[in-house]
Image (cartoon, rainbow, N blue to C red; front, side, top):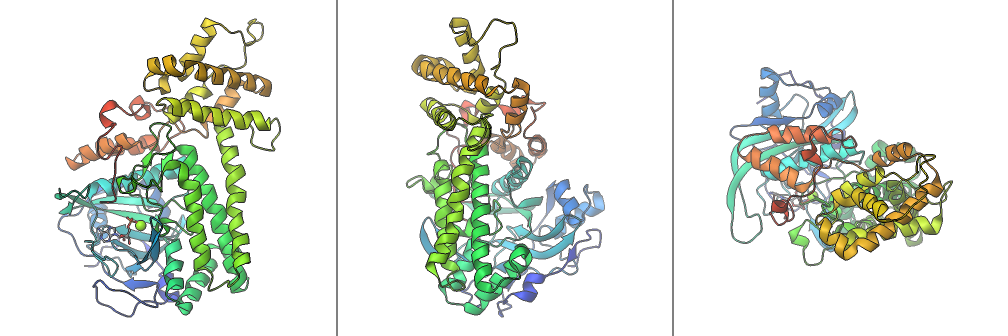
Length: 548
Ligand code: AMP
Ligand code: MG
């Protein structure tokens, strides 16, 4: 079925023209050799219906920002894969990957199908349906996705974009009207769940695993083609260089972007959950939202992914090192273009060179302090304050998001003539304590067991702010610009899912809307509250799995 022209997407399928395409036209599961992609059509669904449409992304693509009856029907058909727009030539990418540290060989888009690449007012984008049916890369899977995971992908990718974190975007969420059977915790309790398809959008979905599979199988021609394609279109500053130099430049640039990406994740308290090499973007985007989570308490050892509960390889605090591990795999995979280990190792050093000072500057910035080497910095004291806060937050359950916002509101510089210059005493302690109380899960127990640690840290921080001499309101504005108050917390997403599974998408839309202004105090404080007790151990809130 060809779709009506009410959705004017301008296709230009560059990847199909420039990269080696799998010659097999039939759609069955197989190992593909010597190709970067396979042509494959989405499998139609029974009763598609648009549950969410993101106006910002629609505008980027040149699509209507609001749907009316006619455009809604067309959007449901096209973004479920039931209808094909003129110029669209759907395909699935071939890639490999290291999963949880082990080489898994061919993975590929097992349930994502790209409709093609389009030109729009916002630039050039690949438009991809996730959950659109089986592909040659589906292995044992059904090619489908459930509503809960598709909703989480749409919600989080949009929230990330508004938080200023590089990410793939999401255009739409279309329910399929068909059940999808999933065993959420792999414990023999499979059940049918509502199915859905998310349409995601990015300049490219190329991952580390794209290079790995070609290097692993010695497919030199395809490797050259992919490298040239990626450099030409996504890293044009390197395009004039000989291939070896371009590959080294690419590795340096991916290292730089990945470090910056991880620094953002650590800033906002995001845990990806499955940082396999097939889930690391070459463009430095957050990609593949699965069992991700947001810190409800400051716990660097936390991972939302139950599949990773043993080794906790992808825990919050390990993200910087595990992304470097992935980049080492990228360096190995670029060896066919750069058979020079010292040169590859030197390029990898860019990662630490960006990460180490960047993380430190980011954590100091969250406290309103200057970064290393900047004017007014007190190197040792500022580093100690960052460390001390982490220790205090770890001592008893503390919500880091609410804590940083509370610290921004702290009165540090006494008003002239108030006679208070750091006066200490019970009243002062009570005032300091009042600052952090909203971020504590059990304020009474924390004060009893860790009160001196907290008060000590708060006095030291306030003294430091006084030496820094910045106006309180100016410091608060700077802190609030890097410390979000609204994040799509796990339990908020779960509340939206519970309603959506009953056919009510209003909570999703309300949450999405709050996530559009993550640094502004929300009109509805329900979006800026600590994890409620019911969510502590509820599946979907604290525990997620790869089953999606
Ligand atoms: P992920 O860990 O979600 O990034 O997925 C790892 C691999 O499994 C990718 O190659 C996916 O395309 C594939 N995959 C995940 N779920 C399914 C599914 N339901 N059907 C087919 N392939 C899937
Ligand atoms: Mg993936």
